[in-house]
Image (cartoon, rainbow, N blue to C red; front, side):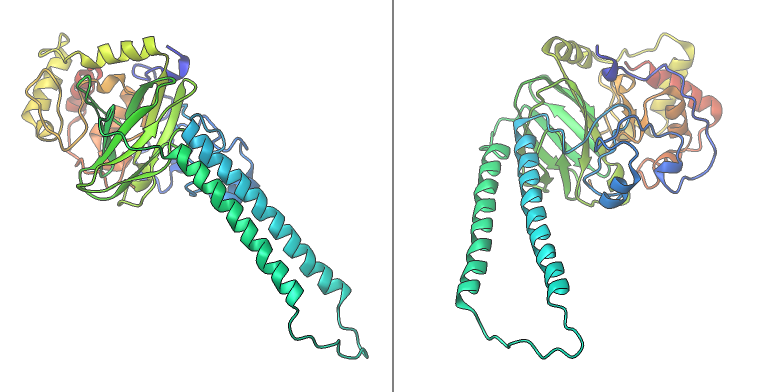
Length: 372
Ligand code: CUA
């Protein structure tokens, strides 16, 4: 497996719990910032220009990348290309207009004692020119847009390879052909164009992988579709790009694009059911706790009686890269913090604080950590 697709479970994190709420993610010691989404590093001018919370910026978390300027599919490339051309055309117009304004201000500035300039009312030639030029520009942009739309939005596919369901605030992922159900992490084989059906369990969300797809809204009772393909293997950041409540900003997911053999291996592992009884004593206690508490009402673990659907399927939780829709890397330490108080890691999340004792948390971490 490539280094970036490795699971973080079992690694030690240096971050220490502080017992506080973090007002911004920048304050949070749990968030990994390994990549620079725009490719401008820590350039403060660029960051200020675009705005730290702008939708353009999809900060790479835990090794993923999300720059709209580095598209990795035909669809995303068409959109990025259109963006660049439009930006250049607008920059030229801006420079010409600003240049003429500055030139006029300097050259024709009224000086003391000078007579008023000649008063003109209308000039047919000039008016024709400044009507035709914008028409041509708009016409060119229209043609380019239609071209980009044809590439980024090919005809619908009714039989989807993947079904993605938006929930407040996480993504459920179903593979109809293999029966796999997972959350917040989409695995795909490199170089295959996949049809994705988009649904929602509650409100409007918007599915977007800046480097791989166009944006598409998930509308209740109306299945939308989007195509996704990755030309190169890697981990791509995905976001919800339509405001959907408290944790909209952290309704994220990652797309892991792998060579076919690795993808097949992932499929085989995901198809395994969880063992009914754990081998380690602490994990066994954790499993009993999971059953006795209300965990089973919301979460499913295939191969066990746990069948809840309100929260993410946990059958292979330990194999995932992140927790809480990409808010923190999936390490035992972070899982411990999550179980101790999910509201502290992700304020507003629908999972309540169960006020578990340290021992109960340890047992649950042991059990959930065994779900590879
Ligand atoms: Cu879901 Cu924003």
